[in-house]
Image (cartoon, rainbow, N blue to C red):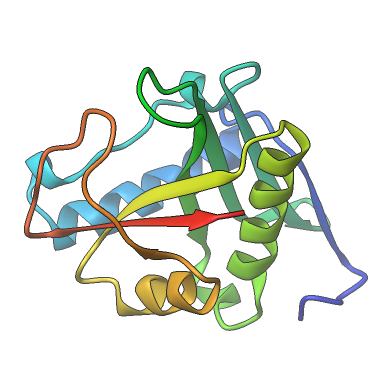
Length: 159
């Protein structure tokens, strides 16, 4: 549960072996659902400070979930953070870990004075889409270097 005292949420290097393992599992899932041109995997370096932030939720020595935000200083329009690499182990789903990570990522943006969060996710992930909707994310058009893609959902939230 979200209030489980055995869980700890903390900053994490995306190059950590357990983070790499979770990201590999996420990539396997995305590659099973979508063609390669519809997958947009952020490399770990893009989620390290100062250009990004990455967090994990641990139980003891096991990483259960991870997620990051890429900080974007837009040429046109406001700066924003792009949520990337959010993934929760199958065995830990429905325990509010993704919600807890999203709250931490949004808090990170607010602490930096950034008031806009964006993300791209696939249309074949109803649980993710439902979570983002519950958190107040709304549809927007493609942003940054994304091209329109019928398999992508582009979402944003004013923080």
